[in-house]
Image (cartoon, rainbow, N blue to C red):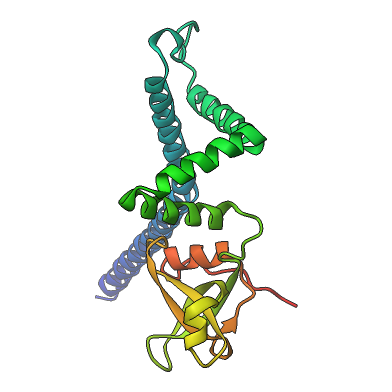
Length: 235
């Protein structure tokens, strides 16, 4: 009986040891699987933005090539006299063309024709409004003299206790400023995930908090829905 009990104890111990080994092996494989999943997601996060950016850039270059190619006569179309197709040749042609137009527009003759064209467009009822709006937008974006979207502010909106980021375009001037009692600023409120859409509000200067983050960092923060946090400006 004693020998039988000893054998049973040994069998139980062996079974227990095997179970412990199996448990450890499972834990090792689970940790390995978790690490592999983490590596996979890290690889996706690292490569996906770069790959998508290059893909969109490539598609844009091809679109410009096709667009420029259609505007050229058949005998002067891109890659006609080349042994191979060169992606981006249309983009180079477009940049050179726009540069030449800019050089021509900067001269006296170019300025005369531009003023003549603007005078003609200004006499067409619907076209004049569209042209005026587009001209103001492009001047606001490309002009170095403008203060368009150079400051980021935080303000309470749509009620007290709820805060939102906004982009200050300029201090309020003109008729709207004259009708309001306080010193106001124009604040554009971009929306997530498309920051090009949004709305304009007029806010008292004393009610906004100026932020240290750049406009680019604010746009990234808004587009990502708060996932991409701006860098802390340590002073």
